[in-house]
Amino acid sequence: MATSRSIVRVYLVLLLGNTLAASLIWGINTIFLLDAGLTNLEAFAANAFYTAGMVLFEVPTGVVADTVGRRSSYLLGTVTLAVSTLLYVLLWYADAAFWLWAVVSVLIGLGFTFFSGAVEAWLVDALEAVGFTGDLEAVFGRGQVISGAAMLLGSVGGGVLAQATDLGVPYVLRGVILVAMFLVAYLVMRDLGFTPRRGASATEEVRRILRASVDHGWRRPAVRWLMLEALVTGGVGIYVFYALQPYLLELYGDPSAYSIAGLVAAIVAGSQMLGGLAAPRLRRLFRRRTSALLVAASASAAALALIGTVAEFWVVMVVIVVWGLLYAAAEPVRQAYLNGMIPSQQRATILSFDSLNTSAGGVWAQPLLGRTADVWGYAPSFVVSAGITVLGLPFLLLSRRERSPADLRVTERPAVGD
Image 1: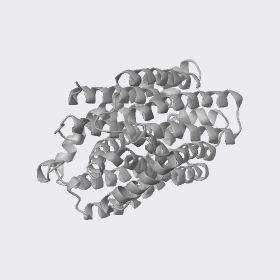
Image 2 (image 1 turned 180 degrees about the vertical axis):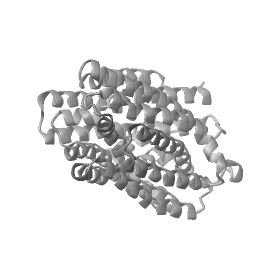
Image 3 (image 1 turned 90 degrees about the vertical axis):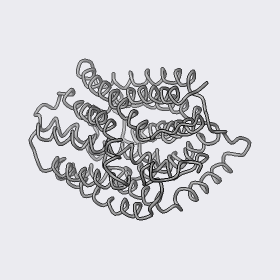
Image 4 (image 1 turned 60 degrees about the horizontal axis):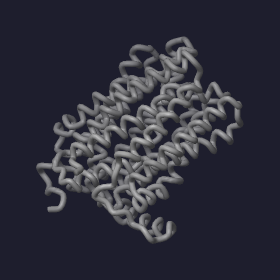
């Protein structure tokens, strides 16, 4: 019989495998694309096509999670991502044209959309089914710690492996791990607390779930403002993460020191672990979740401005740690806030819709910031990233103004089902 402990254990295993596989290339991806002959604009445009793929497929794959099942969605994601990752390696070996990179990047985005929303929805529904009464921040915080540990291992290992062999090997290893995760999920993951809807056509389900997403998501002001904030700032995190790789090599003075580039991911991973542990404590410092989000976003903007104005390698490394801590500590708070405002039957789709807005933010922001880096350099692009982060603050304030019960401490609002 499933218990909250066993459900959380499965969730953490899935996070561990996913993050380890993904992070093997995170420390070297920008260098990999530049090594393939792409410019900064083209490299970040390829990333933008990846996020465009997420925008295109978030709702359809959310329909898969809400109709066929969360487990099926996860299994499809591992297969799609493994195949598209190996195609990336073929493009690199073949010195392929940019349009091919764009197409495969869209397929990678498709792979990730099968994951986004589905695993989180699986966790929340399963915990509710077994009567879990604890704080979701604590669970998501543990997930952050596990993800951070996997990211630390994967990013450092990927950088060292690339330096010892070549830039394509970490991508091949990623595909192998994803195949292994398919087998693990097939054996241990079961849908609990959720009954898939069957019988209706895919078109009917898309229409139904889109209507439900609008009714339970977009038409709820507190949720809508949170999603609009993601639309504005969603591209900042991914751009900064990948742009820091060549920027650190530039500051370090050795363009072939791939292990140094991997330090970006390692620092963010370590920060993610500490931030995950700090998330429940951060939550307790504030009566409202939105207060924690506002403080973290403001401090993140300040950190990005410092990264763009201080050209000292070790100082920048310290500021990256601070930025990573802020980002990681705020994410579980945001997850708990959003999950507290949406119903179970539409959870995966609405979470996917939220991811869609984040991805849409990446579609417009990454080419803009990449072009900024081409014209003025990486440092000014980080300052522009800070400005975009500031533009998201009014949307958090508007969400706060709605005074949703999910914004308050658990002890100050009715329990779920009351």
